[in-house]
Image 1 (tube, one colour):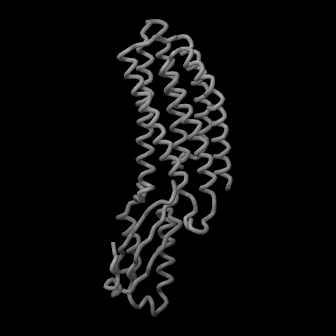
Image 2: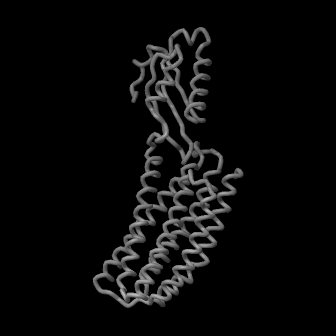
Length: 296
């Protein structure tokens, strides 16, 4: 791996060690305190650990060079990891939501003091893990997915502390379930954002930072270019924009040697203005359109 991915993998591993070391203790404390909020946090932390392991694995897969059937390499492993992280958030949130509603209807006793102590330690652990991941490259959907898990858990622990205080001071045991509902809201919010961004990549939508109209105008700038069609812009991974297009040029470009100059201009233009390193152009004479059956 190159320097940045190696650094990101190391940061992910540190965060994973912090989260996993606290997970078992929290499950025991949740059962002892009969706290749904702590159990919800523990479930979330389990998905945190799994998401960090997946993120490390995806990061390593994405660095493999293209070869064989994988002509683009495995860059989208990171995007798939982000999508799986989002789905795990939704699954855990559904389980916690059902139990929180049940406990609101049929309240059960909750020990407030263990809630406060364990959640305070958990908050410290998650803040530390969040600060570690904040140093990684969060432009990557893979890193962003792992970061969303950990950062959401930190906010959830803060809500659990508040619930513990309310249980101790006001003996309001429903506060535990309400804190769990707050955790659910945070998890759903993060999951939806991750699914939206990973879905755009998997469905090959054009990157938001690329203005297709402006890109087309740049391609039409050379005097030799007559028209542009079959223009496609997509990303193979979090930050790997690619462009392909059929470019209709004046017929004399193929006889006077002008075609290579047009191609150089187009590729340099995209690299300079749109940060596109991978572009593929099919240069066509004016009359070639009548021979294309699948233009789109």
